[in-house]
Length: 121
Image (cartoon, rainbow, N blue to C red; front, side, top):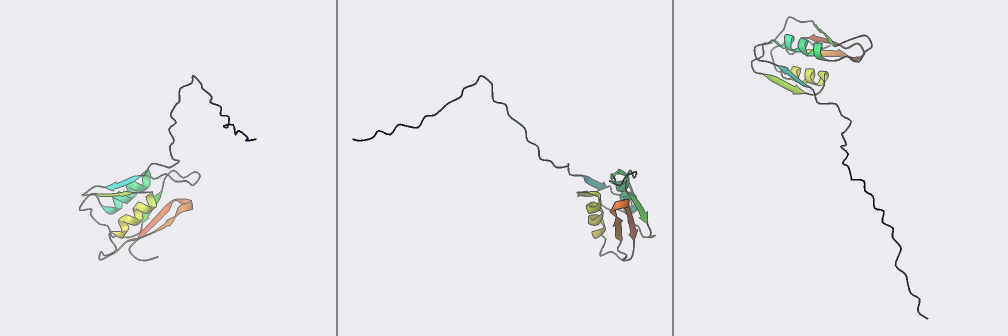
């Protein structure tokens, strides 16, 4: 005798509830932008960045910059960088590496301190 194979049983569940879309947002911080306008000095621009840069150290509100050089540059064209404070600082100082007096920065992240000099550390 020939056996009959029954089709698999399926169950369909119907509900009256409408489907709702869920918005999934990635767990990322918005990208910060850092600008220095034409006519401002590099020192003043970096100091302004430090004031608006939040510090993660307990009891310290923002970054502090110690500009330990008389060297300062006038900004000839608007500058704009993206990223965190330290990456913007690194990027802006890279622009002056071929200058007559290049500037260098050393950061102390646990204390939120930046030291800017016209010589290597």
